[in-house]
Image (cartoon, rainbow, N blue to C red; front, side, top):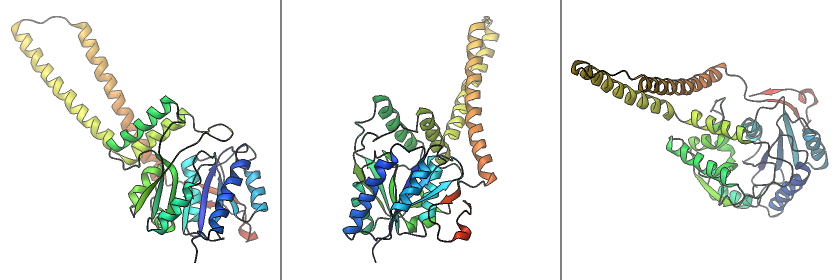
Length: 327
């Protein structure tokens, strides 16, 4: 029996690029089916992440034109990571493997051939890794590479230059379903599941059409989520910093006492002000980091659903066709 593949594609306001890339994805799926690499039951699953344009309408039309296209729509915009998770959880009981990939056509879809081949050789997770960053600006390349190095230094296990283009088996997804975090950073969570894994290298292209929906602010937010979700090292750094400052302060007290008995007391308003400002600033930064962790704990203990599916293109059971699914 051939392997059933579901290609998971998160979409947010992609009405410009979706008509172009959908044909590319279908061609790739068809070629894999014709080469007897995967089953004809394989599907392309679009996840509409609360788009405000005609993205969902396009997905519905694609599903009517070809049975290999299916789609689900979230009740509201929940973000890229939640959209990918929704697609993976939707597919885990229907297929043998999934490949998640962005809709913009930047990731090389031809890498899917090698991903499937690596799966058939025994790998449960296959990471799509960029071989180089020639298409990025210097600033983006510098910050992205620095981010991966920082994550590894913080103790988080991430694959260097890997985003969310990956093959994951249904076996891994069923174990991954036990991870209940609300604060998602998928590229750092899948290595925690374990199982045999490998990497496939590819060159990333320019976006085919439309504009990126991941500006600098969202990238920084994702980076901070990744650090605080996977590592407690910032808290340990605060502890070490507090210990160093306390030690220096203790030495300063001894120095002040010695100077007092030697009669060399000099009014030092400027130095005192600088010290107070320094310690005050450090305290505020430390409180901010601690507050960030406390905020994440607050969100986790609420156990709110990470996504809610409001619509599906597949309407086989009319009684349940509009039923919302919470996860």
